[in-house]
Length: 154
Figure 1: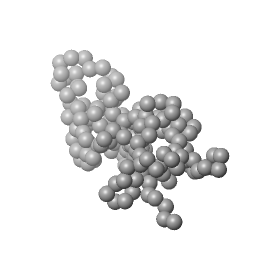
Figure 2 (figure 1 turned 90 degrees about the vertical axis):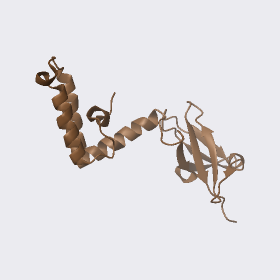
Figure 3 (figure 1 turned 30 degrees about the horizontal axis):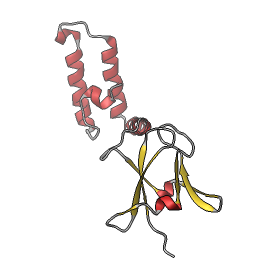
Figure 4 (figure 1 turned 120 degrees about the vertical axis):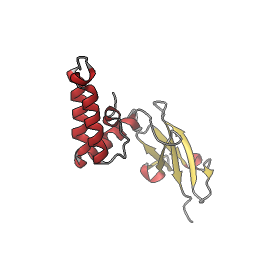
């Protein structure tokens, strides 16, 4: 399904004035008197719905949050295609007297889909800022995450 931004032909950072102008333009381009063809009511409804959501700051914020959550579930992220989490986002538990860090998968929602041990953390790549990062895959689906963490001071 097209996003409201795509329906109106604007960028997610568009101002309210740009959204209003795009709304007028899209309505005119879809109007039967201008196109000479019969416009589907659903097309006008999609344009109007997109406009109503995007010009209202509260509705727009709710829409953006829901849209980002949906994209995350689909495994779509920005930049390198991998979402980045801190080790602090994981739940720490003891398993057979060894610490384990687990996190439910944001895509498939499998509980504990991501699990790390101290041995896993020892394999992390050192970054320029002294932190570490590790790329791991969900044990239930194909989603990969980047986990960043720092070594604890003794």
